Image 1 (cartoon, rainbow, N blue to C red):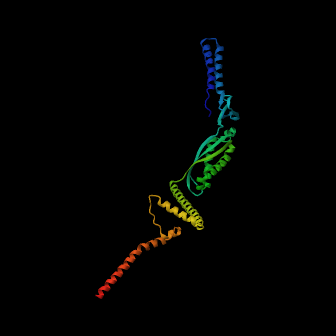
Image 2: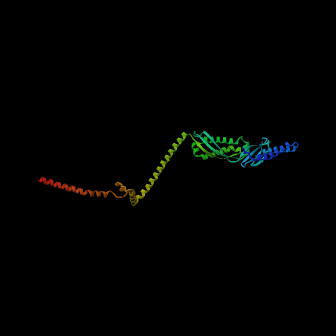
Image 3: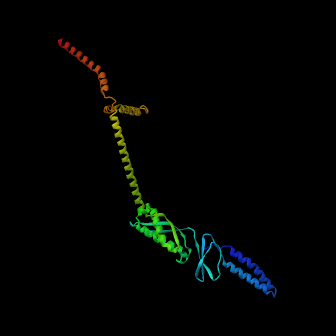
Length: 315
């Protein structure tokens, strides 16, 4: 319903006040019947004009009925109707209107109860159809939207509703627009705001998502190890054909390990052989040199003790 504009009241007051003045003057002085008639005429004319003057906003259209029969659409701006004979049945808003609707405890295709909230964006293109083809086009659009939403939910899986909302929005828009087109209403878009599922199912889905993330993490880790092993294999082929490079790499590894806090590193002999840093021959020779004087001393001591025993026996 259009808001009341002050212009009809102003027109009524402009004609009512002079008419009231003329009427009071004619009644106070006998014989001034003309003044009384003019006063009554001004008051009646003011009332008729006040009822006739209507103003529609830029986005409004007035559905005018004359004796119950549709005569046309009026507006926007200033227009007039015939009081008593003509009435305004509807004020139609031609702007884009938003309507929120929802479906509660509706089963999906995989029998999961969900609560879905959505928003409908629509616009009246034919005000005549919206006023004459349906009793209350706003309520009709709301009920048609809810019915279409339940129908789409029943045909969709829960995973599709959570992941493919855009597809469901387009399907809903087509269904609702097809139903409301005969009412002169065009549905521009439908957007699902929220999908609520039971708490027990939320916990199960959370555990499933966590397990899926762990699986993906393990797969990524295994793939990384495979790539690293492949790089090591390529490096081994390079070092295989270039012993000098392997030797430099081994020296660099030992340097990196020893440069921090003068760390002492014990490296097995087999590792040294593999890294071409030399074998244990030098260490064995050093051990022989260190142990050789001790062996000679033991031999001399043995000879001396033998001579002493021989001397004792001869005596």
